[in-house]
View (spheres, helix red, strand yellow):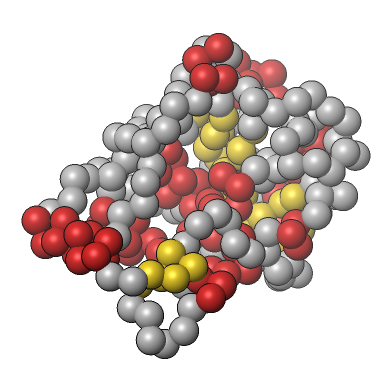
Length: 225
């Protein structure tokens, strides 16, 4: 069953963001057999996931549940489904650092504030980059900047040597490109969480961010600056 992806977000147009995040272009159309499966599922009795029992053949999933806590151990299955159902051609080459700078729809805030929808300061990103360099043991690692703002301008403002803007494509292409990094410098965003989940990569998060509300913290993969 394909997820419902098409949506309109007025804010992305008001802020004149590059990616309007309508998501309708991400997945390929259903095949004939998939339409038949969809129709059969709608004819059968269904139950919400919280009330599931073995006598029910169709389960309804709504909302975010326990977030990434519910997805532990299924990364390969999720990745294969997304690739089989999508229109994107994912990046296959691995590189050193992915930096995710989320600004457009996040409120300006001090780095010590731990709310999800708040920006991280440029100073924090510079500190996180130094931590990533130390982790990799490289002075000038190869990096890719992922952002909803002007990437070339941010690369210049942050002084990101040996960084390039993210490759063109849709949101899923971006996620798979982000997942190919050895180290992810993350924003307070579920988009960053998806990038780490799909790539099983090391990630640097801001101190004070309640990461455990989304996933279990692995001290071998999750670092705080």
